[in-house]
Amino acid sequence: MAAIHLSFLILLLPLAFPSAFAYETNPQPKKTQVVIEGMVYCQSCDNYGSWSLSKAKPIASAKVSVICKNQRGQVSYYKASETDGTGYFFAELQGFEMSHLLLEHPLQSCVVKLVESPLEGCNVLSNINYGLYGSPLRYENKRFYRKDYDVVIYAAGPLAFRPAHCDAPTKHY
Image 1 (tube, rainbow, N blue to C red):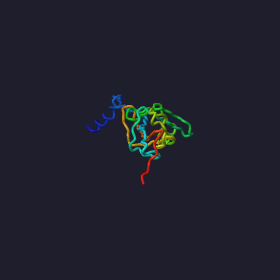
Image 2 (image 1 turned 135 degrees about the vertical axis):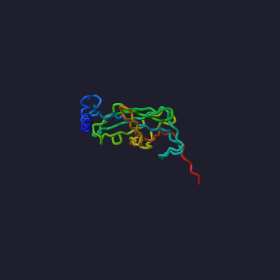
Image 3 (image 1 turned 90 degrees about the horizontal axis):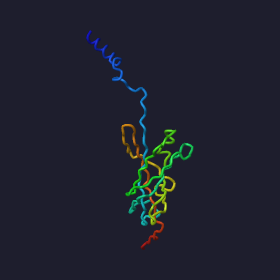
Image 4 (image 1 turned 180 degrees about the vertical axis):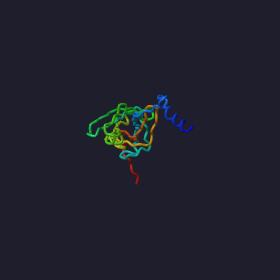
């Protein structure tokens, strides 16, 4: 008999103290902040004509652009970003939105392109990792969880400018 009264009291507790037992029936989905990172280098003349970045040096203050297109091929997002002193860029895509979760996902719709190098001796665009036409993004399992939002980081590149003038390689026979 006591067990029945206890069960009955447990059932009545949420009615007596509704705020203590409240739960959200329609939880709001967390916002997701999209970030794109990468590196920009000056390709060594030793590797002219290839995609090799051996002996490449990072470029501080280089500019890249992040371009995202919607499912109709129209530019839906654009952001220019600048590298830090180590040649690294970290572009937070503030205001980036998707109307179609698959076709407008950053991995499908966004690319990174070279824009400008501050180095006079290394300011010719190269197509290393498709820096001319748009380097595709990749997901490297980088994600941060915050209280109100998540941060998802995608990577591009590495991208490179090249010197305007490189001596022709000499072949020794």
